[in-house]
Length: 66
Image 1: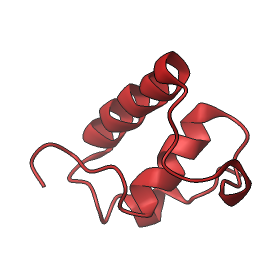
Image 2 (image 1 turned 180 degrees about the vertical axis):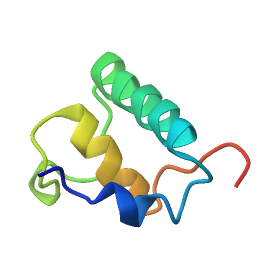
Image 3 (image 1 turned 45 degrees about the horizontal axis):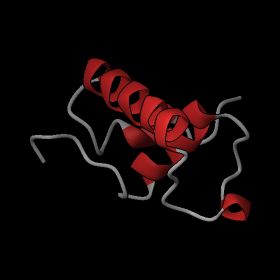
Image 4 (image 1 turned 90 degrees about the vertical axis):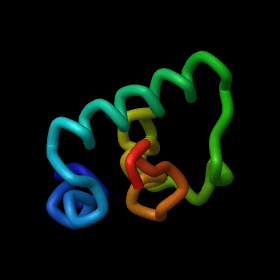
């Protein structure tokens, strides 16, 4: 099961499509720049996609219209 739950995150973002776009852009930034907003130990996920979802859940990454 993916953490964090996508159902919880959808309350923060307007649509699933916007969530997919936001998380994919953020995970690509993580790979390209090796920049993370939390310490490595604070992430539960090992992969960048999961880490990006965690950042969205914590409010560290927001959609452009918010």
